[in-house]
Image (tube, rainbow, N blue to C red):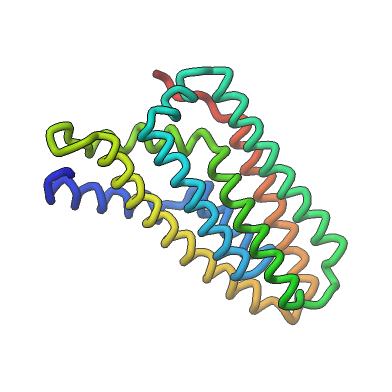
Length: 215
């Protein structure tokens, strides 16, 4: 493992990046505003697991192969973008259909959380920009003389994912409180859900326009 000084610098840098607003935080906020705190927390845990997919793939060299191929990168980003846009469209449609409905029952909340977790995993796992981030960020803190490079990559990546997930959870709780505070105003809840759906569509479009990092 890197020496304590390098490790401390890595944690500090990873923490700053974790709390910097970006697509991941906006996605979790949108899910929380659309479905409440439970869905936001489930989305956070899902994107965390999806992030670990990229960490393991990066350590094994799979991510580098994807980023090196224009065709693979384009295919992955378009699938991920289409999935995000579909989730956003579905959220918009549900908001307009159920905007005046009462708050969901416990069983519906459980189903929504399970779905939010699965979708969080897929949204993050299908995002090649996450793979590019880990391949660009982590090697700066890897010391070839300190042990197996793959192990260092996975350990540092796991720390980064954990910090990102903690930041996402904080956003999920805050956005969930905002939505709960609006629970007595169905019209406001509908507008929040519509805005959340539009935000997810915008994130999908942004991913679709992403360019493959230069080698």
